[in-house]
Structure formats: C-alpha cells, structure tokens
Image (cartoon, rainbow, N blue to C red; front, side, top):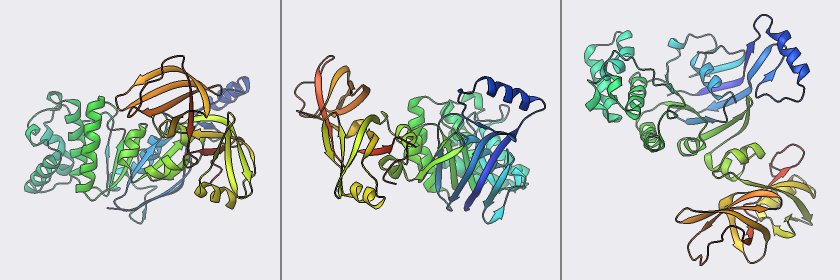
Length: 392
C-alpha cells in the first residue's frame, strides 16, 4: 500500500581499527585476486548506486548470486542496516533515520524466527498485542490471515509440531496480520525442499492477489524470480545489472552476466562474428551464417554497430538439429521425456541443446556427430570489450 523509492542508495561497511592497513597489505600482495565487494578507503562497499522506483502494490524481486548485495539492500529498507548514502522514501516520507518499528513494514526471514514457546495463534497475535489492539480485533485479524494461508487447523500447535512449509506459512501470517505498507521477504523458501518450494511459490502468488501490499522479495533462485516478480532487479557485486519484467530480462538480457544468470539450462556462448551488409546484419559461427531478425537489425542500425568479433548467445531451447549447420560431437544425452538434453562439444565449447522428442526417430548417442542451427530472432550479440548487449 505504498510506493517505495530508493534513490542512489549506497552501503559501506567501515573498517574496524587496524583492518584497513591489513586489507591494503593483502591487496598489494595479491593484486590479481578478485573479490565480490569493492574495497575503498571508506571500507567495504556492499551496495553501490542503487536506484529503483517501486510502484504501489508492485511485486519486486531482487535476484543475484551470493554476496551481490540483495539482502543488504532489503535490510536497509527494513531499517536493520544504516544507509551510508542516498535516500529511501516510503509512501512519500524519507525513512533514512526512521526506526524500523515506525516504517510500517513487515519482514519474513529465511529462518522463520518463530517463538518456540508460543502457539501459532500467539505467534501471529504477538505484534498486534504490542500495539494494544482490542482482543476481538486481534482474533479477527489472526483468523482471517490463518484462513488465507490455510493454517487455521494449526493455531493451537507450537512451531516444533509443524513442518517446514507450515512454519513458513505461520511466519508469513505473522507478517500479514499487521497489514503493513511494505512486505519484505528474505529468501523465505530456501530452507524448504523442492516440492515444498513449488507449493509455497504458488501460495505466495495467491497471497499477493488477496492482500494490498507492496512486496520486495530477495532470492538467489531465478525460478522464484521469474514466477513471482512483476519486475526483476538483477544484481552483481553491489550494482544493478538490469531491471525489467521476467520476459524482458529473458528475451533481452542487458549483458553477458544477465544472459548467463537467467535461464535454465544456461545460455550457450560462442566466439563469433557480427557482419553488417548494407542494412542487414548476420552472425557467422563455424562457417554457418544466420541472418538476424528485422527487429534486431533495426536496433543495431540505430546504434550504427559495425562488423566485429562478438560473443554470441543462444539459449539451449532455441536450437534445432539440422542436416547442416554448426557441427558438434555428443558427449552426453539426457532423456527428459518430452525433450532430450544433448551436451555436445562444438566450436571448442561445452554446449547444451534442448530438442523435442516429438517426431524424433533416433536420439543421438554419445560420440555421434550432429549439426544444429538457430533462428536469427533468438541470437544475442554481446560486445567483446564490455560484455554489453550490442542491441541496447
């Protein structure tokens, strides 16, 4: 029920006494070693230049590998981490120096964080009792939330008597009874097994449709990001790499990192050439020349992109077996029912092809030489210099 604006947010963890000199010495001794977080004279920079406008009732997902700064960003919104620089605005009010309890937010943690000595009902009612709400109002809110989450039958139980999925529902219920303006969720499904994660994803989607709250959700799981988010914020090393709808980041990745992070199995990458011939563009791979779609050509023409060596990206599901095309040797053939995943060696790279089994007479076996092709609509062209998508 609130718009959230993060304006050029930055988080720096200052050095403790003596740590700066030690860090500098280590850095001098190991100049080639890469670290996830940037080290400056101020300290360790965990989040840098983070700007995002989140609309009222929007579901935003922050996604990225461990150490990219997504949980730190969420904790700054919650008030659990101090903002080093920038401005946080919730519902039109600057919140940088507002105490967490006064921000009208609720947070669901990875570890459930339930009170073990309290029943489910007591856990859910606790925050409302601290507000000194009327008993009848507390009871109404708790039972309403329990019904939404289908945990009414567990209200008299203690957390130890519940499964992991049931405990997570209680943790979510404890958050939604407060009717917060903003709901923050920090990898809430990571402790659940695969089946429960799928079920809880569906429950969160249903929940989102039933309560009028702005959601900010953190995960490292791209499946959760793609299925839950209205928009996805992809982060790496404290920086935003791309913001867009699930379909936008899948179809038009901004750079190599996004292309390799979103999609399962991961996108195939090749050393290839981008060729401009008049107003048309082609990619050349292994002697196989593919004309890019009119839409892609128009974007490249608008940016006056010249012929050059590129990194070519093609998703496994966008490849087809062909009589001639790019050649490769099958290393592993995985039957997945409706499709077969072929792991091959082609153009000096490990490549994955996903091929439907419909009408396939013979499934290629280990050691077979095959050829594959791809359509110009699904070819992604990335700069060799800075890894960005040359179309954008």
